[in-house]
Each structure stands twice: as structure tokens, then as C-alpha cells.
Length: 169
Ligand SMILES: CC(C)(COP(=O)(O)OP(=O)(O)OC[C@H]1O[C@@H](n2cnc3c(N)ncnc32)[C@H](O)[C@@H]1OP(=O)(O)O)[C@@H](O)C(=O)NCCC(=O)NCCS
Image (cartoon, rainbow, N blue to C red; front, top):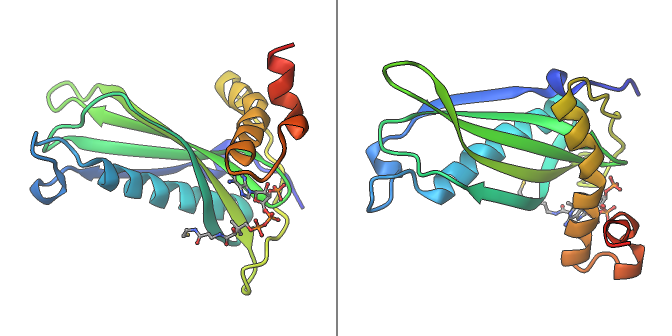
């Protein structure tokens, strides 16, 4: 299976914030943003694996900035690292200034997808070849995040979280 770069799985969704999608403060409802992030990340994982993909876990989401009604929101997803059947997808969320067009980072998230066959059984995916500095940093840290996610979901024992343990030694 031929390795792919994060750029090859890059997926960009741009959309506005409409009145039905806001909370009482007139900012984008968190669940709506999570859905947009999941959609972009899922397409990205599909582009990387060319398989059916399912969301296995939402590892991290930071709602650092509110996204006001009427904002133009861009959700950008890339596969940062692939393991055997799972892929980590990093999602950056940007808002665009109406007058200057300048983009500001609003939020980010990290999701894990698993590639499956028609019966839902996990299947192998291609490796990721990071190119830029940020892609390399995200690739390096992805194994720690995978171990943390597996540990928190009770799928591995603390003694098996070798990358996490190494952080404290
Ligand atoms: C995700 C799913 C396919 C995993 O099935 P499973 O029987 O646990 O399979 P495995 O134990 O072989 O795990 C498959 C991969 O997922 C990874 N994985 C499973 N749970 C994980 C978690 N919480 N965090 C990170 N990775 C996880 C495993 O480490 C493994 O990765 P690897 O093959 O790259 O090493 C299965 O749990 C499932 O179908 N869940 C429902 C998905 C769904 O409906 N999502 C929402 C709608 S799309």
C-alpha cells in the first residue's frame, strides 16, 4: 500500500453560521461545530484510506473562541498519522474577518477514524508521510495521543502506555 502525505487527505469545508445553528448568545452551537468537524475529518480519512471509515473516538476538542452568527467558518482536516487500521485526523477551525478577509484560528479537534470493510471489520490503511514541520510534530505526538485515548477508554493497561510513561521518566 503506497504511503500518502497529509496534503493528499486535506479536506476544507467552508460555510456560514446561520440563525438556527446558534446558542442564546448568538454564537455557533458547539454540537453543530462538532458535526462539521466530524464531516470534514471523515472525508479526510476516506481520502487517505479510500475505504468506508467510522469515527472511533473524539480525542480532543478545544473551543477556544466563540464563533458569532454570520461568521464564515472554515474547517480544515488532514490525516496526521495512520497506524494499522486507525487514522488520527487533526481539524483546524478558522473564522474569516468580513472586511479584511484575514483568517483567525478559532478552535481545533483531534478525531480517530477506523477504516472498515462492508461488514464493519477493520482493514489496513496506508502510512502517512509528513512533509512540513507542523505535520512532523503532529505525526510524532500522535502515538502518545493514541495511547492516551486507548488508556482512557480502558482498552490498554497503564503498563502498555509506553510513550506516555516515557514522558514522566
Ligand atoms: C471503531 C471500531 C471499528 C473498532 O472496532 P474494534 O473491534 O475495537 O477493533 P480493534 O480493537 O481492532 O481496533 C481497531 C483500531 O481502532 C483503534 N481504536 C479503537 N478504539 C480506539 C480509541 N478509543 N481511541 C483510539 N484508537 C482506537 C485500535 O487501536 C485499532 O487501531 P490500529 O489497528 O490502527 O492499531 C468499532 O468499535 C466500531 O465500529 N465502533 C462504532 C463506530 C461508529 O459507529 N462511529 C460513529 C458513527 S460513524
